[in-house]
Image (cartoon, rainbow, N blue to C red; front, side, top):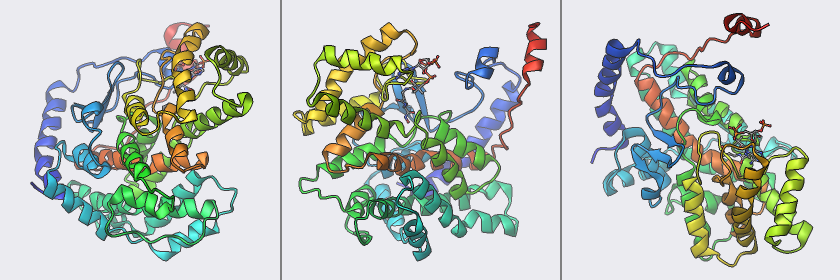
Length: 426
Ligand code: HAX
């Protein structure tokens, strides 16, 4: 089977022809409309962008290149990247080829480590990770080729180069952020005998005698990689990339959005929520106790982290994948038992509350619980692990868009006065 680069290259011509034909023949057909509520409401549900790497179905959740997540959780994150970019599952040779390629690109320049070390101990790991990604921008091959006058049809090639370089380095810089931020001593060298995700936990230096943290990390990095194009991180990366900002700038933009508590930071918030409950009750609370606590949170104007979703209307299959993992790996862990009580109680409370359109758990409801159980006990780091994974999806989307020569993003904003005039409001 072809290497990632050749596999993707072989598809570009037909991809371009397909889209060109679609736009030429059907460019004026309406696929959606925008309402006043959508214009003021975060453009929720507005159909005005394209993403072919994955689709999120309100009922079935994440579907990667036509395949439901539940059929893909055995994949490594690297294989997932191959699938996202090319639409095909790699065979063993293509998979090994990609592993070797990432290993060969993994060396991080010393000044990036210095940048990480210079950050104060109060910095958030997401700020440190984003800064490290920006520090790597100096190496951008796309920027260098653009300055030399590369033709538009070839943009995707150095964007792919930059993306592979960045993906290869993400575990190393994330692990360096972890060790620096939590004062854990010297950085740990990459182990050439381990794969991309195993190297993340190895370089973080978290003991993993049973190998369960390694298995969890692999699953975590697989399920968080992509969630179609409209979520905040993917959308930000896409928008920055549409201005021909290179992979480093674009991923840094996406990571900045991932750092928000309503998006990627929810895993941190969710674990803190669990720990707060354990502290308050000194045990896993009963269903009634938890119900009262949930109402206390809602009545104080806060959200219950780990529940609800902007698109999903059923339980997140990423949550289900983690739940299956936890049932096998740590059925008796106190925090897992608590998350189970939450699963039984919170949907009912949110239904009674009457606001959330989806009352079911999302991926963040369990991811932090598991990381905590297996020795990553610093919740503020969780979103950084999410960021390592989300880089795969953001970059796959970015490369596809450069291959399709997608133009600069520029929706039209309108003023409140204009809307009032349109709808005849006073
Ligand atoms: N707890 C309390 N209220 C909630 C809620 C929750 N878990 N989920 C939604 N609501 C509220 C909203 O705040 C909103 O209230 P207002 O009308 O007062 O503004 C109302 O219900 C309608 O919201 P919605 O249309 O159902 O949901 P949104 O698309 O506006 O928001 C969110 C989706 C994920 C941001 C929301 O469900 C939320 O805040 N959940 C908790 C935080 C969380 O778990 N985020 C992670 C989501 C997954 C993800 O992106 N990970 O990266």
